[in-house]
Length: 331
Image (cartoon, rainbow, N blue to C red):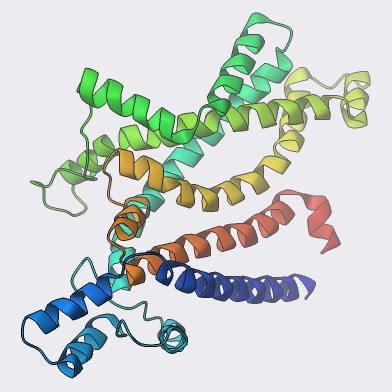
């Protein structure tokens, strides 16, 4: 009963947060310099339309006219948002924002999931080895490599990979999530093309995140090694393999929460990697909408990323209660 109440409370809080971010985004993007709606309005008048006809045309296309009071635009936007209508894109000439976002979101989800899971597995494994072998050469090498990679910004890793493997040594393709000559569908050539085009972006995600997982896991393992249950297991003669399993299981618990949170925040970081590799996705879509002053599309992309972060927070809260029996019993 308490768990169900917590779920309802967190979902309600998440909905309020989405609404707040939507309001903030609405005013932020409309207070930016440059107004493509006004430019479209003036273009229609220059083509011979009357101001009334131009205003009606622009309202049909974008939901508001450039000279309409901002507060009226806000209430219209809020009403449309409550009906899951994010408006029509300016740069895509009236195409539904929801359709555009849902079309590009799967590519970002694939990159984020593959990159995060890869970096998590590699980082956790290396962190355990670095902690257990911290006095040896391999432990020092892993620690130094993790520290170096953790300090390199994500976009620098992406730029370096793009330069090395698409320009200096053109091994991997650049731009687009798959070969345009193939027929999209559940067939081997298409799946292979998608995987081939995703290698560099996924590698950029994984390499830029690996260092954080490795250092965090190493610190967690070293902390667990000093717990009483480890000493008790050693005194009772528990086999090292079993003891090692106990240590790893307890040390990895805090990382599950961070994993779920990182899943949301990596959506925000996708704009650097996708823009550098010219890869279709929410990140590239957001950059395009900002450069084109596409207010509806900008708001829609921001909103989707916000929802991803909030849902990740909720998942992290309950994931930790699932993997940690102590918290599960307390709820």
